[in-house]
Structure formats: structure tokens, C-alpha cells
Length: 384
Image 1 (cartoon, rainbow, N blue to C red):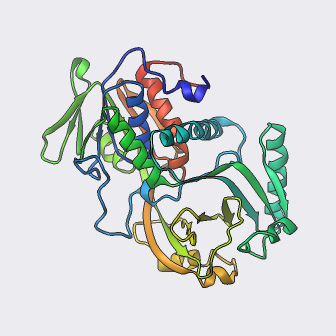
Image 2: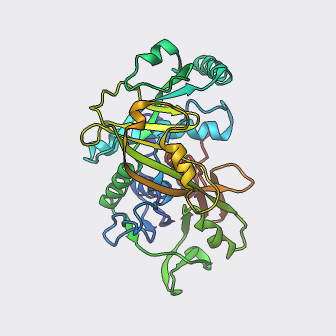
Image 3: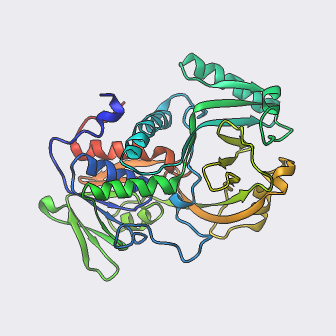
């Protein structure tokens, strides 16, 4: 049994756990804990009583996880050591193990290997060349692509791209598919859920640990282990306990477009140009759809000028993109920790865990974050 599969083995002892927040991180935590035999309660107002996700009244406003594009950038990460690097590599390994397991249970997941990062200028091309050399020395299969190879792609990539870095093991996972699969699989294993908003956390005496309270002050649960994965909402919940953990929202806009002409996608996966991702979705009906995003904006109000720049992929100057039809637009907020690196993985008090503030990498880092939570609950040594 490999290490990624071993993390799914049943635990030797079982601990009741409540998880607050049903985004991709909370769902990975709940799913993994439930798979290992722990009784889990998942609490989030966006859950319907049946356990399915509720629809937002504003179709253009989505939660952080449902607004994400699901791009997995692990092996192209600019640093090759430290906690951020280790979390990315471990999470990618876990996704590669979990996806076929979920699919074998009959769950549909749209996952595609491959990420092509285009170089916009000579300086970026040089950084890519150095990164390829460094990663190949580590045994990772990154490749440098020249302009001639890019010219063979259909549809065409931005003409200003002078070269590219290709990472075959990075890629993209549809967050909606992943969340639905994790939730359904966990519920089949006994996961309980409440579609309620937690407004306060109280310390309990003895082994009871923590009391979760709803909007009317009523008790939603009493549990020895509590995992907070609720993004920006964690700040207020923890403040009442005397913990200062500022997390700020960063807005992002994204688009779904469709090609006018019949598609002939020959791209090797996601393509990144000037920091913006274009995600082909040939799995969608007609094979013409793709996602474009996401912007980085301060505040809570989406900027139309940022959306206009996003619509044309910056300065891509591509006729096929200019003629594409906008099918959907949406925005959401990423949870970014203030004055500390993302994500926040910490045991604040006995039985109180925080796994939140993943900023732009919630989908990528969710499995490794869930594994960290399990090590805390079960008292196992943390992976190094």
C-alpha cells in the first residue's frame, strides 16, 4: 500500500469531530475523517438538509470554493523547499490517489493533467528555463517548449509568447465535481450534516470540549474535536475565544465562454498567460467551452474594468477569443491570512483546529490540509 492510500486506512481509535465550513477544504477534512472511521458532523449554512449544496440567490456570486477554477500548480511552484512546497507536492500526490478512488465509487470528476505556462518576455522565459533545470535535477518531468512547438497548438496561443514551460503532472480539477463527490461519498459512509450558521463557539468542561451555537444561541453540537475551515468567518468565531487570526477577503472574477467555430483543442491542459488561467472544458456539451480567470481585486465589489481585461486575456490578441461568446460570469472571495503565510494549519487549543486561509490554493491544498487534521485528531506524528 502506498503512502497516499495508507492515509485512508481505518483509525485505531475513533474520535467525534465537528467540521465547520463545507468548502473544498472542509469537505476533504470531513471525507477523510469519515473514511478513517471517525463520526463526523459537517456544519455549513450552504448545505441543504439533504446534504446537497444550496444554490446562491445571486448566480454571479459564489463561495470561495465554488468560484475557483481548480487549477493545480504544484510542481511549477517557484520555491523548491519549505512548508509550501511540501504541502503542494503531498496534496498533488493525494489527489492523484483519491480521484480514481472516488471515480471507482461511481462519482464523476472532471480532471485533466497538464499545465502550460507561457513566457511573456525574455525575463520570464529565463526564469522558466532555470526552473526546468532545477526540477529536472529533482526528477520532476518539467519541459521547456519553444515558439515553434507553441505555433502548432489549436486554437492559437498569444503571438507574443516566446516559449513556455510544460508541467505534465500539474493540471485542473473541477471544484464542483470534487465537492459533490466528496460529500456524497462521505454521506454514504455515515457523515451527518447541518445546514446551520455557527455564530459562536464556547469552551466546555471536561471531555466535551466545544459547544457550537446557532443564530438563536441554541446548541448545534457538543464535540471533543472542532475543525474550523470557514475562511473569513473563522476570524469572528475565534475572536470570541480570545484568538486573533485576521483573514481578509480578496475578490476574484471569472468567465465561462464558448467558441463560435467548432473546437479543435490540442492544448496539453490549462494555459497560463500573464498570471491568468485559460481552462479548456472539452468535457462540456459541444466541447466548445472554456474558463478564464481569475482577477485579483481588493474590496467586496467586482470591478467592470478588471472583468473587461479578463475577457480578452489581457493583451492576448486572439481572434478566436475575441469572437467567443460569454456564457457565464461570476465572482467570489478568497480567504487570505494577514501577515502570515497561507494556509493556516494550527491547533489553537486542545481539540480546536484551524485549517483555513488557503488564499488561491484551496483546491490544490485541501487533501494535505485534511491529512494534517487527521494527524492532530489521531495524535500521529506530522509528516515531514
